[in-house]
Image (cartoon, rainbow over all chains, first blue to last red; front, side, top):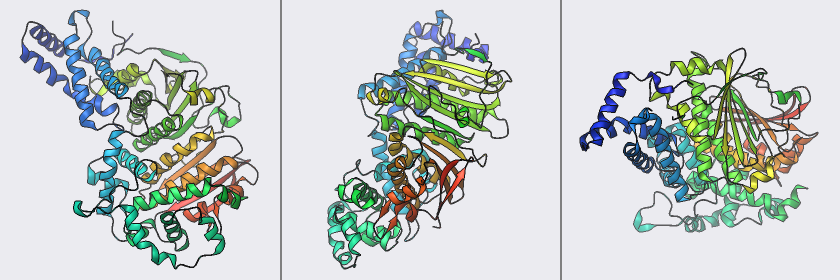
Length: 259
Length: 309
C-alpha cells in the first residue's frame, strides 16, 4: 500500500504536528495558522464539487466549514497526515449541503443566477448581424465556458424561465413583458401571405411561435436578425423556436402531416 | 488507518481492451452495454463534453443531485488525470463509459498512455495530487487497472445509488450500439442508448461541440434546435434503440455523422422533421446533408453546419 502524501517533506508534517499541539493546548493563533494553511485545499475542493450547480461563494463557505470541523476533530496521534483526514471531511460537508437542500438537477440555483447575466451580456456584445461566441461571453463575464453553455441551455429550454419575465435591458420603470412586446409587433407579420398548407400546419402554434417560425424558415432570417426585428433577445427567439417546433412535433395535427 | 490516499487496488488484467476500436464494433453482444460510451482526444475541452453528457443523463434519468455531483466530480478528476499525465507532450485517445446496474452506476475512464503507477509516483505535491484521493472519497469502489503491456490505464469507479425507477427500467436492457470509427484523431465518437436519453443529452453534447467550433450563440441556438429534432425523430430511423455519433470540429464548422440507420432511415429521418412547404427542419438548419455507408454496412447521415457570422 502506497500513501499518496508520503511525498510531503518531513519538515512540513513536523510543522503541522507542532501547530496541532499548540492548538490543543489552547493557542487560537495556531488554529488560525492551520486554517490559512489548508484553506487553499478547501477552496480547491469547492471548485471541484458542485461547481456547475451552485454559486462558488456558497460552496467555498461550506468547504471552509468542513475544514474547521476537520481541524477540531483531527487526532494527530493516529499517525495519518491531516490532509488525508481533511479531504473526505470537507467533501462530506459539501455533499451534505447538497443533500440537505434537496435541490433537483433540473433547476440548479447557480445556473438560474447566471442565466440572466449571460442573456444580458449576449445582448450587450451582439451587433446587428453578429452574435458573440461562448468564449467571448465567458471572457466578458469571467465565467467558465461550461457555465455559459449551461446558462444558454437554461434560457433556451422553454420550461425553465417564464416568458413573462421582464426583458433584459428594460429599465425598471418601464418593465414591458415579452408577451406585450410581441403583441405590438405582430400585426405587420399578419400581412405575410402564406401557403395554406403551412398555415394549416402552424395553426396549432400561438401567435408568437408562428411569427418566429415564419421569420426563421420562410423569410430565412437568422435568430439575431429576428431578435432585432421584433425587439427581443436572440435567446428568447431561440426558446420560442424550440418550443414551437416541439409543439409541432407533439400535436396530433402535426403528427398527421408527417405520415 | 485512513485509506483515502492509498490505491484501493492495482490489478493486472490479462485481457486488455483494444483502444480506439471497441469490442462492440465487432458486433459482440455484451451482457452489459454502456448507456454512454465516448472516444475522443485527451484534450481539456473534451472533459467538458464528458461532463455535459453526465449532466444530460442525470436530467434524463432524474438522478438526485448528490449522485450527479459525486459522479461528475470523480469522472472529471479521472479525465483531467488523462489529459495532464497520460500522454507526455502529445494527445492520445481518452475513453469514457457509463453503465447502470441494480442500484450501481459504473464509470470507466481509460487511456492508452503512460501507466498509472509512474503517474502516481510523479505527483509530488500534496495539493496537485488531490485528484485520486477525491475519486476515492466519492466512489464506493475504485479500481485502477492496466493492461499487461503497461500501455494505458483504466480507472473503474462504482457509485451506489438509491433505487431509481428510470434506472431500474434501463438495467440490463441497454442495446448494444456499435462504436463508429473516428476518421480523425481529433474526432469525437459517441454512442448513447437507449434513445430515450437523447432528448436531454443531444442538445448538451452538440452545444459543447458548437462551442468548440467557436460558433456564435446565434448558430449555437440552431445547433440546439437541430439536436431537439434529431432526438425526436432519430429513434424512428435507427437500426437499434440508440445512437452513434461522430463529430469533427474545425473552426466555425461542425460535421456530425449519425447512425447506424435502418434501411431508408436517412430519408425517413429527414422526412419526419418536415414542415409543409418549409421542408425538413434538419436540412434547413444545416449547410449540407449526405447519406453514406460507413464501416462497410452501416448507413450514416452526415450533417454539415457552418457559422458564416
